[in-house]
Amino acid sequence: MTASIPRGRSRASAIFRVTSGNFLEQFDFFLFGFYATQIAAVFFPASSEFASLMMTFAVFGAGFLMRPLGAVVLGAYIDDVGRRKGLIVTLSIMASGTILIVLVPGYETIGLFAPALVLIGRLLQGFSAGAEMGGVSVYLSEIATPGNKGFFTSWQSASQQVAIIVAAALGYGLNQWLAPSEIADWGWRIPFFVGCMIVPFIFFLRRNLEETEEFAARKTRPSMGEVFRTLAQNWVIVFAGMMMVALTTTAFYLITVYAPTFGKTVLHLSTSDALLVTLLVGVSNFFWLPIGGALSDRVGRRPVLIAMALLALATTYPALSYLVQAPSFINMLLVLLWLSFIYGLYNGAMIPALTEIMPVEVRVAGFSLAYSLATAVFGGFTPAMSTFLIQYSGDKAAPGYWMSFAALCALCATLYLYRRASGRLQPVLS
Image (cartoon, rainbow, N blue to C red; front, side):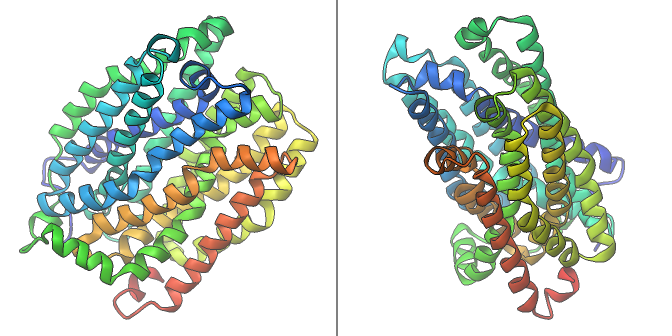
């Protein structure tokens, strides 16, 4: 039976409704990364800016450590009760974490409770995000028209780029309207409040989301224990999937979440320039992601994945080296747009490939676990790892080593998955 949503509901409407939660997730994550210096000063005061920033990025990364747990627990829940009900639960947990971070007073007001509560908020966000992305991706793959699964699933990531654009635009506007001291004191909280204000609207959208026909037609659904056993039996596929996702998560957090901090603290560009570059990168990502998905529908996932991984491996460090030797707004824009091209085409093919390699009965849990592990090990700690590598190597282009390593992992995983592809996987992976 062809998976589709019930008649009377356009697929475009379903895509908008299901990806709205992805928007909120990435909106908050980007803000945390961009306002890292202000958050560090308010919640994590230390003897040096480096130590304070590292503590902030460590808390940022801690949220990603919760993703694998959320992937297994919430992913299994979604595979059991359905995509619609599960995605409402993930949204509820995510919104709770966001509201907590917004309302926490600073360290000077409540002492150690401040960083502790911010950490709890990040852990809640990470737990929910562990299954949010997988649930949305699988939903989109199950409503896709024949031969267009790559194009449909690409809108999961495309919705995140809209969040980057909106968040960067808000930050750019605040930078024009408020003095730096006002932003550092209280202005940085305004975009987070905006995120809280749109939560009721997203709940309304998710509440009216309809179940996919493919899931509704399923005769049996696995229990939580059966999901765990199936995941354990397919641990090789989950691990290889994690390695395949490594390039996506590292590239994304490097060119979006970490880019403003890199532009300000490493390249010494103005805050406005760093934000404007990030905004334009979000537009570029939004453009390339559907193209990558559609291209993989036409030529296959494998050629796109291998080509982009090789490009990342060959060009990332040289491009960043060029940038740090000649730092300017134009050069930063050109370099990040190139990395955006690689990320967009790779991710557009990778998302549908990951939904296809997972056993159907644990599709959400398997996808979510592989993606979450990659985000926890690679992507989520990209800001902290980049800061660390620059500090201790003295090489301002050192983040290029980190992304190149992720590209190597992705290339090896892709080659392995396609080489071991069985008769069941071969038709969808070719």
